[in-house]
Length: 407
Image 1 (cartoon, rainbow, N blue to C red):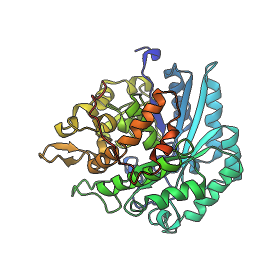
Image 2: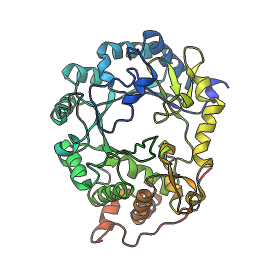
Image 3: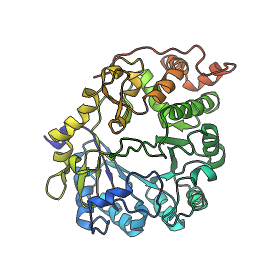
């Protein structure tokens, strides 16, 4: 297939593999290092150049994003990323805009890192799980020492240097019962304006049970509802929460590009430090290894029959319970990695978090419908804050319409 006919895709890089300076209790990626025994966990120059060259070559759209993650990517040092910036300039086509994002725990962020991020217009994602006691409950270093102060120091330097940042907060058993405390800390303490909440769900493959740090389904639903009720009354248009933006796009009938809430997936893959490409960040295992870019071009791997079917399976393996659900249009079964529960009828493939998502999407229906009306009338959706004034609960008068899943 000619490159210009390829669908847009996202290839997140793990240039240091699973190597990290923290040992978070819930981390699912640390053990991925077992796939590469004896590795230095540093992307070689040849792999780095091929990753950048092939990614740019495979995109005909005018903007390409390189996402750097880990592990902890700052462990590779600024020299590695200076080299990456030079290679991007080398292969960038005229008129093409290249964006870079990096997800970091913030521990190693100093003035020189901030100068680099600012000069190269990086969007920096900071991993932070809320105020001190909630963050430190899970996010410790390898010696078991707490990290909150070190993360906040790095965050303050990003602000000092006016580096664009957002917050990625994992919702787990420790902070899941404190939605308002977490949200208000980010809004009022951190002054963050872009938030992403990720549920921690890790299943023990031998016992089939979830680990003790996983968020419970009802806990997850109540967390999202608690944050939404605060946001919809005070912060629409000033604080952006990925779950809420994505939900509004679903109610409005527009694509949003978030794989977990899309009918199909498969366009967000991972490249490991040695050039191996896997189907998804949550499926880095031998069964989902597509190949290596040093032997097969990336554009062939991302459009391979195996990867296309991987994406289609998200929709094709939905149990009947999901297909008949009134919030299917907003949920689409969420991420396949969480589909290890069974339906009330005993059918496998139900998402572990189903109860929470049904609670959340049903709860927000009324405000979402109002915001859609405002958008259709050419008015800002922030008018919903006046609409919500005086209502005892966000769910007052809400209703959920069944919609046909697109595609």
